[in-house]
Length: 261
Ligand code: ADP
Image (cartoon, rainbow, N blue to C red):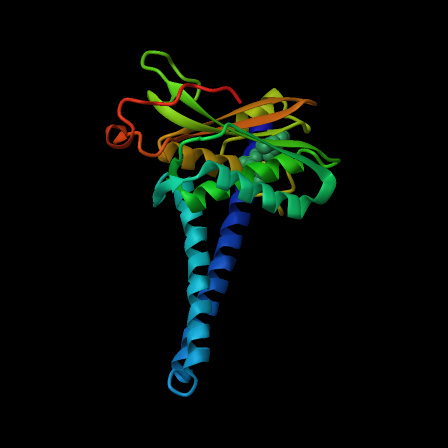
């Protein structure tokens, strides 16, 4: 009966998602189409406005593309544009966004080692993953709490199995740590499944952890969750260090030693 109920919830979440994607896409196409049509009419009379309209249409199309990219990445068919990303800057941006939206409710901390090498990952997708993990952490602390963002390097050695099944190499390990409700063993086991949610289905998609994990794996990294009811949750995201493959060019034979958060 439990499995049946979970299935029914997932189906409900899936149809919610399909509905909201169709709705978003419709808005995007109407906005872009309408803007382009108006722009064509004004092209000669009022080129400045036409340009403005075209810019807005492009923005709408970019939004649409990001919706489809999210879905594709969930299906393991994402189109990623990996680039070297500065970790300190990423965390500072996230911290800024969180502190402006959560006010004084959260005790926000950043625990990052200095001089971290850049990550090789798709910026939009990584930002979306970190935002989703931070949103989960916040929702797990409705009465406030501490949210810690951690970053360090970890070197995975040959012959030693890794809990996120990483291949040997050097990774940047990003952690989102909360001291909120935590998860029961049962929830923890299902949490990364697509469409699994314990939240109000009208608001939650049950895709945050699933898309984050699938993004991390497609990027050559991984994701792991630790959680204890009443104590909190730590989600760890491993992503490859930029320049690993051609380390010989910039940094001959060197790789950062493993560091603890
Ligand atoms: P959603 O947030 O839309 O439910 P997710 O895939 O992000 O989807 O999370 C799935 C479920 O995992 C959540 O509904 C919640 O039960 C649990 N969960 C995720 N992150 C946390 C967290 N930081 N603390 C407690 N529970 C969590």
